[in-house]
Amino acid sequence: MGGDHAPQMVIDGVAQARTLFPDTKFHIFGDGTVIKPLLEEHPELRAASELFHTESIVSSDDKPSQALRRGRQSSMGLAIQAVKDDEADVAISAGNTGALMALAKFMLRTMPGIDRPALISPMPTLRGESVMLDLGANVECDSNNLVQFAIMGAAYVNTVLGLSKPTVALLNVGVEDLKGKDSIKAAADVLRSSPHLPMQFVGFVEGNDIATGAVDVVVTDGFTGNIALKTAEGTARLVTDLLGRAFQSTLMTKLGYLMARHGLKSLKDHMDPNNHNGGVFLGLNGLVMKSHGSANAHGFASAVTSAIDMAQNDLIRLISENLQEITLGDEPE
Image (cartoon, rainbow, N blue to C red):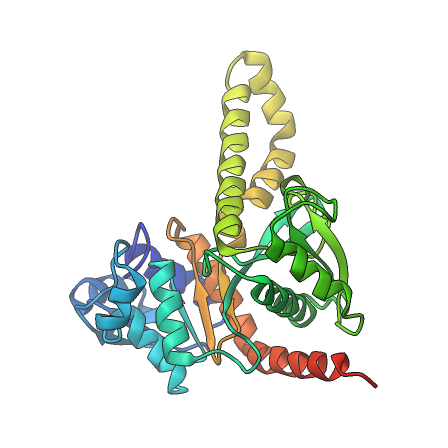
């Protein structure tokens, strides 16, 4: 029931994802009076789904504390409960990020050695894709949180993207060691003094380094990370719209568009946030995926397919094993 265009976008997106994973079964939580007619439009999805009716939803305006008090019987809370009860492998929502984080942390609890979960997601770059965390789950973070984010981000890239020793950096206002908040500098000191971590810690990067793909993992607090993510998405839309207007301005530019349309389509696809949709909360004893609230059906399908891949690859177990190895690796010989 979450998202700007829900529940139509959700049902259409799940139907798209199911064509790639026809053996997947879906539990759908929400207002059955609204959802059931939408499922009727997708007979194959309807046959592969079980609908759980609830009139209780978490609104976009609800505070996390409100979601904790009355949200466990909501569509969001029931989806997370299904993961906790091993009735589902992953919960996916395009709803209120703060409420989803609060409910997921309360119901699933954090993994041993992790103080706070973090929201991580791939981002398009000149080199392909990088990941950044946290993207909004934790507005304020101390140095220990940032160190844990770096470890989880490296483990995510290692297990999901297959990079054995990813490059990791902290997002800062400059690359010099003396710049930045005390928490960022303290986190950098810890990461520099931990040579056994399965990553290459390269220090600091600035905001303009994110899009270049200078590193595989960009680590920051949720306040800064969310602003950086939304700025990148807005810039992508700005560039796409400006190019469209420019190519429609004269007859010559229209002819130029005809010659360049294939390249422009590739550019648009690479920058489209719907093609990179779906962040996962790392550090929980279960998989919870957050879709953009503004996602369309294609974007939600991208989140669903990513979630299925993570569940099939047993991401939680792999990250847990990496965290254990990290702990052992940091112990003095």
